[in-house]
Length: 218
Image (tube, rainbow, N blue to C red):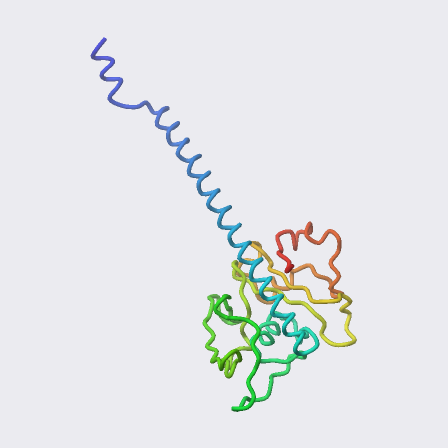
């Protein structure tokens, strides 16, 4: 009896090994799932904070220039960046070259945001030169830059294109495409925001497949 008991205690049966592996796999799945959920919640919280900061900057822009930046093409996120970094006016026209007497007003602290570029899949580092609270010079590629959300997509900015367009909303629409935006952010995917040309969001907007995880500015 002692010999058999000792032999039995020296190892595990195949069934026991499989059960142990299954338990480890389940626990690992739970841990990774929790970590992923925490990561997504953190990213969503960051997006909400950055959208709020951009909204405040847009209000400062309007108080100074009388209107929000107009959208001059298919990529309103480029107009948003140009306007809030003090490089373009309401209608998207570049401000005149600067001299010692005229400095551009800027509306955002670029160090608080991730900046993307149209021809790059990675964030970039713009090089602004500040004079007090104003921008004296911004790198010449500003027209290709945008504010990037935590998932690698631009923060989408939608507003009127002119005084006689189809825009009916009283203000702008500013949003993140959310986790489903991913890196497919330019041209094809970026138009898939589900906002109609009028800017009036349908009641079921956040339930639609194209917008179910979009995050709207407050």
